[in-house]
Image 1 (cartoon, one colour):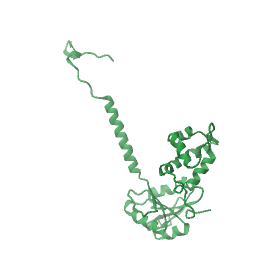
Image 2: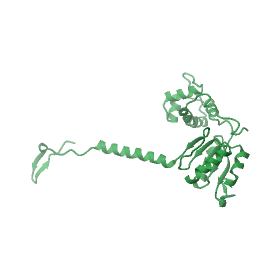
Image 3: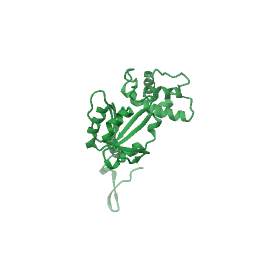
Image 4: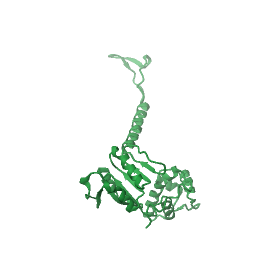
Amino acid sequence: MATGRTHRPATRSRGIPEATVARLPLYLRALTALSERSVPTVSSEELAAAAGVNSAKLRKDFSYLGSYGTRGVGYDVEYLVYQISRELGLTQDWPVVIVGIGNLGAALANYGGFASRGFRVAALIDADPAMAGTPVAGMPVQHTDELEKIISDNGVSIGVISTPAGAAQQVCERLVAAGVTSILNFAPTVLSVPEGVDVRKVDLSIELQILAFHEQRKAGEDAAHEGPVPPVSAKQQRKGPDGDVPAVMPA
C-alpha cells in the first residue's frame, strides 16, 4: 500500500478553490451515510441539504471534479464517494503521528474515524518519560527523543499536535525538519511554518466563543423585539374609586 510520501492530492494542480476543498469532506460524509443505506443515486438538492450547503454551490463544486450528474436521475452515490475520496487523497494510506498524549491526545488516539477515512495512526509521542511504554488505544506511547526516527521509518507526512501551547512551536519545528509537510494543530497557539507546509488549526475555545457571540446577539434581538413598555398618556387614564388608574387596554 502506498504511503503519504508517494503522492500528493491533485486539488491544487487542477485549480480547485480552497473553499471547495473545505466542503468536499462534508459531501463525502453525507455520501458515505447514503452508501451505508444502499441509496444508489441522490439529487443535488438532497445532497446539498444533507451537507448543509445550497444546491447551486454544490453543483459548482462538483463541476471542478468533472462530475455533473444526470438530469432526472441525479448523482451516482458510489462513484461520487470514489471521486471525492480520490481528490482528497483518501484512496491510499496516510500514516499520522500524534504528539502530546494528554487528555486530548489520548481522545484523538482512541478516535475510530481515522482508519475508516484513510488515516493510520503510526505512533503516539509524548515528552513525559513516565508516559513511555504506556499503552493508549492499544499502542505504546513513545518518547519525543524518537520523533525523527519514527517519522522516517513510517514515511509520515502528517503530524497532529495536541501539546500545551508553550511546547507546540518547538514540536512543529521538529516535525517539519523531519519531513512532515502537513500539521493539524490542536494547541491554542499560532504556529509559524515555512512555505510549503500546510497547517490546519482546531481551537475548541474559539468555536465556543463564537457561539457565545451568537447567543448574546440572539438574546439582544429578543430583548429589542419585546421593546420598552410605553408610558400611559393622560387620555388613557380614567377616574377610579382610588383615584387615577390606567384605562384597561384591549388585549
